[in-house]
Image (cartoon, rainbow over all chains, first blue to last red):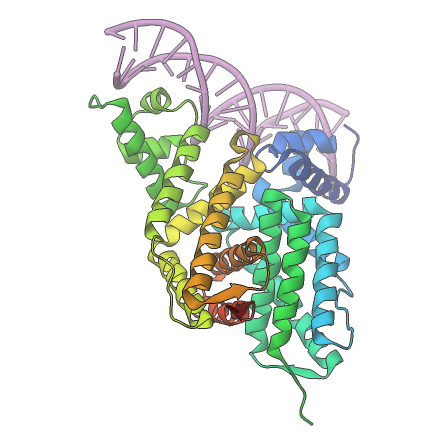
Length: 200
Length: 200
DNA sequence: GTCTATACACGGATAGAC
DNA sequence: GTCTATCCGTGTATAGAC
């Protein structure tokens, strides 16, 4: 094996893990499979990472970071709250369909984090990031459209995540994109009911 | 080990698997742990089940059946569509909080079914059952309140599952029951907007 | 500092004795 | 029909070559 810096190895291995999970599923993503994909030896793996859990944690971090980039500027203001919500959710959906593997991986990571004490906290961190993003998005839409929300923004953010998460999970099961888009549009319309014109 | 009929062994092992997964998590539910819990030997396991996957499939079936029983009569008619939806969702939530382990197990099973080719079809079957139940529930509420739905009932059923699923997943992560109930109540109110008084 | 080789414990699965 | 002994793959660890 070529001598590669530990930093590069880490990147290679994380990228390889992402590809293997996306292509063959979480179950097939053994340490040895990841090493083969990355062109590294087993010992090289354990030289860079203390354990497989450490790689999974790093994978989660990087995937969430990539997600943040993919969804940067994802808030779309259209004057009308309903239209803004619809556009924003449609943009969200575009990022899902552009890279379904990422959603698969994130969903699988959440599940494993919930069941595996060694990954405790990873799921919570993931959802904290989701909720923060949702709160910001709703804030921007409210401000941009000159309306206020009639429910606490934390509650609306949770509902927003419930919707995106639920739609994504259903789609991962049946891959019915048309149904997913229709559901998102309907939810956008309904969310607009929680906005009231700002009194000045 | 006592000589037990294969049928009884199967039941013992499935029950033991459910207890272990609920108590120690999916990761700890090794075949050996399940056998110990059931008071059976490893070979007895493989005499009853061809593989661990087969037990998981059976566990899914039985858990879904138990779910159907727990949620039988879960539709609550209150005259008002919004109130009916709220009561029905609150009843759903009661079944979740009464037996959180079951939701954990079902969620974990869905995820494994999505990633493991050996369990292909299990997730789809699960969601088909969810959607059927949701359709029936919405139908009953519409009929009972003398209203019709302004969107196709299949779409509303999907949205219903999105909400219950999303709320449940969020709760499994942060265990915030108050937030879950608040979200469900708000969604019930939203859903009522898709009902129109029946013209005769 | 990086890789080779090897070892160990534990997981699922199975052949074959009783 | 049930159990013992064993196999192979996986995660993890480490001693030592370069």
